[in-house]
Each structure stands twice: as structure tokens, then as C-alpha cells.
Image (tube, rainbow, N blue to C red):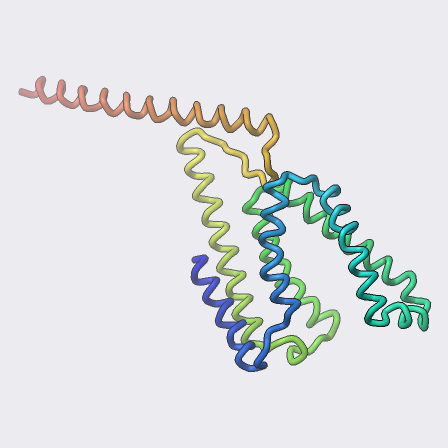
Length: 225
């Protein structure tokens, strides 16, 4: 199903690339930059708030230089609203990013993934209903439709995978926590070890029970003769 979702999304994006004849460098940067970014954060086990402060510290000089080169300070000087609107926008963005990082380490992986898939769909609905944006300004209806279908397929695939894992865990007596953070906490490690031991004992008991059933069947056959 993930291949089907990727094909649907590729069809929608490919249609808009052919129609408009170009690709937004911002979209390309986000698409190619965010996956390695999240992977690096999980590999290094950086705390959410610490990582966010480090990112903002690195980006602040770059942003100030870009504002100076593009004349952003002169625009802000002409309208005093920018002096408090821009810091508020930065504060809200930092809060949203920090909550996202905390959620990635607290929520189960399947739930966090499903919410991440739903977020672009909610932004699209909000831009049309509340902000009164036109489809012609940001892409075609075909592209948004294909991306929406891809998101629906990914959500269904995540739900099916979660149900299958839950069923297998109940079958083998193994309750492994789905934790997004890395490395896992100590009580999660202990719970994982206990789950592995329970699953091993469960499999040994099943093999022993099958052998006993075969012996019982042979005894019944001998008694019947």
C-alpha cells in the first residue's frame, strides 16, 4: 500500500510539474532536507528543547544576514507592526516545532505517523475554508486530490500494520512498546526483555504441547486397534 501511496503522490506532483514547468526550491528543500534531519536527531538522541534551541541559534545569524541583504529591515522600519508580529510568529513556530519533537518521543510511532500524514490535509482544508485561498494560487485540484488519496492510503496502511502488530503481540505474549524516541528508557528496555522471554517460553510450550498431542493421537490409534 505504501507503493500505491507513493505512486498517487508522484502522479499529482508530476502533473503540476508538467503543467507549470518548474519546481519550487522551497518544496524541494523541505522534501530532501527533513527526512535526514529527523533521522539525525533520533540517531543522536537529542532532547527536543535542546535540539530546537541549537537549531535556532544556528539559523538566527543566517536569517539576520538574509534580512539585511534583501532589505527586510527597511520594510520592518516602515511598519511598526512587524516589530511585534514577527517575534510572535517566531514564538508560535518555535512552540509548534518543540511540541512536534516532544510528541515524536512520547507518542507511539504509528500514531505519530498518522498525525503527520493528516497535518498537510488539515492545512489544505484550513487554507480553503478559513483563509479563502484559491486553488490556482498553489496548485491544481488534481494534485491536491492525488496527495489526499495518498494520505488516506498511508493512514489505512498504518492502521492495518498497527492492528497486525497488536494481534501478534497478544498471540506471542509479547508487548513491545512503540516508542518514537531513541534510545528507549530503561523500563521500556526491561519490558522488551520480559516480552522476549515470555515469547520464547510461549513458543517452547507450544512445541511441547504439539508433541504431546501427537503422542496422544498415537496412543488413541493403538487403543483403537
